[in-house]
Length: 257
Ligand SMILES: Nc1ncnc2c1ncn2[C@@H]1O[C@H](COP(=O)(O)OP(=O)(O)OP(=O)(O)O)[C@@H](O)[C@H]1O
Ligand SMILES: [Mg+2]
Image (cartoon, rainbow, N blue to C red):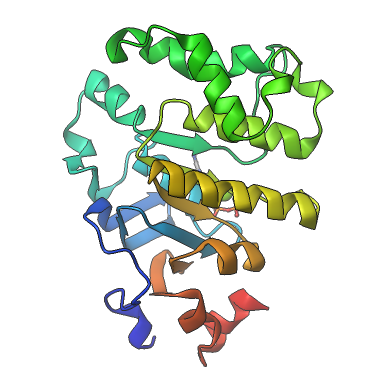
């Protein structure tokens, strides 16, 4: 390991408060240790890119983070709350603060675009005192430049449009944190670039903190304030794109090939 594994050093890192803090996270399935002593901090207004080989435990980490999977040990704080201490209602409330863009677009095929966007609202309208869902749906669609698709079905949209609708859905509750799982995978380079631009503009407009899981080196270059490389179940290295991509460590270099 090298010096980059220590504290985040980058000058370009927006050093706000930490919005996510994971300490000594451990998770195994039978004998298979997936995460061991995994640590991560993500700050306000930060775009944090997480890279790791297929099967390295990125999704497991995310699932622990949003309470879909229980860690064996370790602590996870989201927006200052220890998630292991929350009951169901509290966890639900916290989840409203976290937008999630699933791998693929994961729109509901049998629902129109409008209904897809209303879905996350329905669950939280009462508590959040949302009166006009129509307005929110339209605003979310305008944010991704697709207001005209409101009454279409997902299968009437291109792959890139579906991804943008999924982004609109993830943003509709104006979450403080947004997690993107492979946002550009399967898209052509031009559409991928559009999605990255959209992610950047959204981050600026809503001042969200974003965690971006990606294998896409171009995406990481453009969007990341800071990066973390997950290797052997642990946070192997962190730093800016510049710092990591010029590392001499062959295990780090392998990520940028
Ligand atoms: N519910 C589960 N039960 C048993 N093993 C699991 C479970 N979930 C994940 N694993 C194992 O944990 C390891 C990490 O899986 P994970 O889905 O986190 O990988 P990943 O880094 O997200 O990979 P990819 O880039 O392909 O999405 C894999 O070996 C997987 O088989
Ligand atoms: Mg995964």
